[in-house]
Length: 175
Image (cartoon, rainbow, N blue to C red; front, side, top):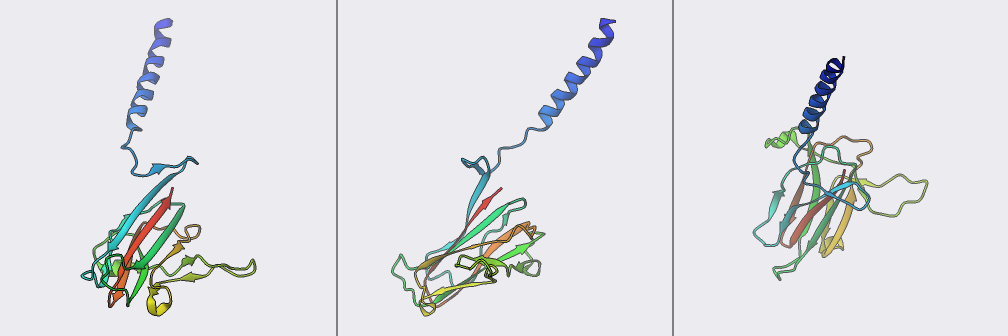
């Protein structure tokens, strides 16, 4: 009788052992925060020379499953090369991470970090222009994605520069 009880116990132990081994995965790239959630920071682009002009696409990032996404767009001149132009930033999204430009869509619902009254809706934009002619030549602006209503797989940052200046696109994601 004890022999028949021991066999199912051994089988269950083997199954649980395989399940434990199969659930082990590589350590996530994301860092655990004090609140117990995971976050990830990405510098999409950092152009500090006048050679980085016209349209520059950044690296692509997989943000599937992110609960929050915030972008920081920055323009200035730390190298003395000039800062008379404009940098226009936008975020593009894709479900395929393709190298084909037509697979990327400009995200037109970036939430601007501006003051709104309770009765107003959030201010949403598709692009952000920073430059001396815009009155914000050396500045950093913050925008967020609406991940409550959108399921985003891949993102990248696009900047179009006119004349000169430096620009940086940085993203923070919480999972």
